Image (cartoon, rainbow, N blue to C red; front, top):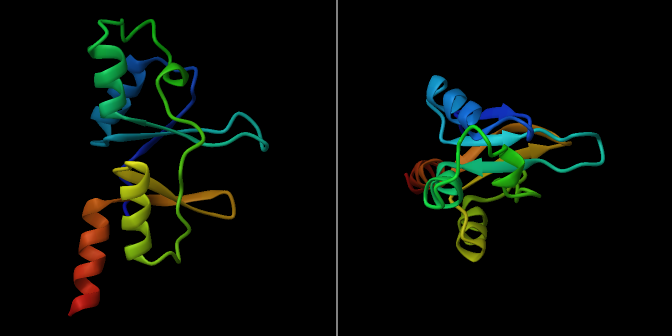
Length: 122
């Protein structure tokens, strides 16, 4: 699990998201809930490339909520890495937040999965 992500509000612009990602060396934005009954969202660099850059949209005029995926597919901290890998494959994911009791603990991606699986083989 890594903490290599930023948390932003869905009303912020794509430019603000890119600036925050660059400043924090992150490739993922977790979009905050608007209230306790809402769900988290997720914004990846690939989402920005496909939905903003490729469509020649302005990074200053597009808000995060227009591009993000919501609700985010998350994993519990105790889930076995094999099941996380299967979940990623089934839903075409490359990363997911680790959430426990409505709190984001971190982010897991293929790199973390493989390193954890490698540790289990030793």
